[in-house]
Length: 246
Ligand code: URA
Image (cartoon, rainbow, N blue to C red):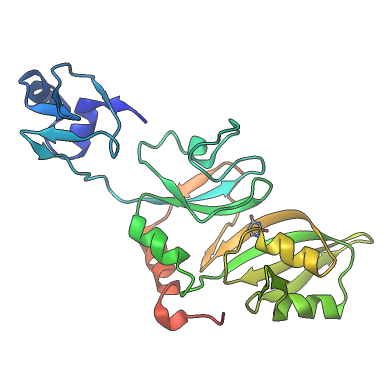
């Protein structure tokens, strides 16, 4: 996202916006090796090489992490070649460059974290720490004891057994069952493929928990910034001594 040069310089703590404009007019700012003299010049932080007096400008942007209720019909990428709405569109009002931690399918809704904190993202996604993710799924039919047991004990996907999961039935009708399933891995379309493998395809899927975080009553498309305490608890869930099987 392109922004005016003085906005970027001010955010990086170089000087106030007004003083940053002066730096530009004085010819002390280069973008990709060229002196620019026009305040308002558009730059993309992280992409353009911005320097003041020859020294690279680094980011002072504060770290933030959001919990978003991703609606169905939104992709979990920054840009979509097919032009579909993206999760970054939903948080565009914030000036931070945020990226999603992990992903949810286009058709899945629910809890998605977005952050500009690369080390937090890396830690939470590290397979070694296996942070628990909880999903509520509407599945076709009425699974019997052995189907639920297979989900818990693991099914073979791509030649490898899924790690132990916790599964509970939370509702049934004649044709459908609602289950909650807690997994510690993040394989592609994992819950959908696990349920299909035991003969009960997923009709609706929503992520309702991530570590100690719960989606709660956040409406689809809404988000809120996590508190320092919530982030500390999340990090606690991604500690080596929390290592899970598989
Ligand atoms: N499992 C899935 O099948 N889909 C998701 O979006 C997340 C987990």
